[in-house]
Length: 164
Length: 342
Image (cartoon, rainbow over all chains, first blue to last red; front, side):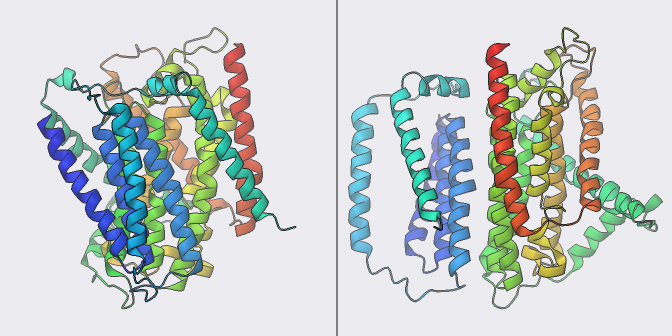
């Protein structure tokens, strides 16, 4: 597991640096590109955790779709090159507080649920079929809840975008 | 592969890396020469390159050397770091596509379980590079080209992925080797000699995949993002020298990779009728068969590129959202019904 630990250290370091870069940069497009690096670093860590399917989904959905839409929206409206004077970072205490609160809740929930679990050390990769099996049996109710939520968001977007 | 040759992980990886570094530029050069230079010339009643090498075969290598000699120019107002990173992102996206392409029972860089899903994910990364290039150039034509490219790639990525779903349902797997195996072991009404290439049962999927791939490659009739008559070249207006070369190589290499994906999913991949699926000799013959099929698919892609006029931006978006996406969803439903019934 030594190689995995070293790889984790490097990837986590890059991810954290990119995250700091994202909140401290004075250019909105740079912030979005730093976010791409953070999401890519997370995907790399999922690969280390042998969750290949989740890593691929992370790349496809977050980098390939969400971040492209972010950048598209930013560039379509106003994205000057260089420092943007309005981006002073003056509200950082509030942002830090909410980030801490959200992070605290997530970490607590994860430790509470999976705190004693350990990763299999025999390098088995979770097969995609296993992921879908557990999604459609054990986790069917959360899956359906998320589906309905996404459908509601979809309909909401259509209603907002309608011209009449 | 490890079991076959008994190599250590690092040795195997460096061999694979070396092979990939030879194969990808060769593939790009081959497509570029055969189709972009020669075929286009013949279709336009020209001779094409003649002087460098026999029949002008070395023309692209001469061009590459010329590009490498050029001065590395940045626009004064450009965002330098993003400007430099953009072509690398685009090229990395097309290199990553080659990781999963199978060319024989063991001749594959990495036989990923998520196969085709991974290919779709990494191919979507190129949009990021295009947007970065368009924005960082500090040029309104480049920015417009980048935005058009992003809008188009978002619209056509959906039908591309949905078209693949039909194949995945029929083959029961995302893994590209399993998809080849499903075609090799399939039967057409009890006749199993040539297997069952999915182009027969998934013809609608094949059509949608080819159309969407054409759009992903921003080739005519979907070349609004690089329309030279209105945008002087789109997102790569400001690029010269080896940075432009990277964009060019990525474009042709991606065309090759998409042709290979179409071959694997719809034309039976590397399998040769009459051979055992795991026969070691297919590691040598497979790549040859793959190459012939890839050139065939690439021929169609470039044929359409040289013969069709450009679609308008609104026609292009309407075609994706109102025709291709409903059609590919219907294809999934029909495939699903057949899968359950048969």
